Length: 168
Image 1 (cartoon, rainbow, N blue to C red):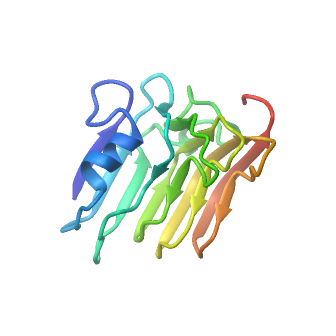
Image 2 (tube, rainbow, N blue to C red):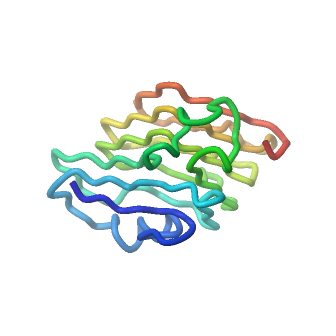
């Protein structure tokens, strides 16, 4: 297994966009790939829409997960709180979603996602064998926002979606 890390300090990557552009895009997997997300005192922040795709998994899986002890089940799983668990936050104004998941053979586990603009926080489309579990997804109200836009078949387990005008 190849494991990369993401967090605010001392990790392989400091944004999800940098992980995707410099490592994931164009990659053909020869083993399972893991991206471990750390809570280093705040959310991993992206300012552009991020599309987690562009890779060829073959028989292997990409897992994006909270590092051990830093996931949603380790804390209060019912609300957005980036001080409690590993999190991603975006200021992207993309109408298609701040975090887009067109990739296949994908597991996303134990994380928080927040979009600070009035668009969807997550968009799930075109991929196969996608599982999203133990997540909090927060997006403000207004515009086309619905928290998660699903254009394809995916599995969801223990996912809380918050759509409101507040910050928490």
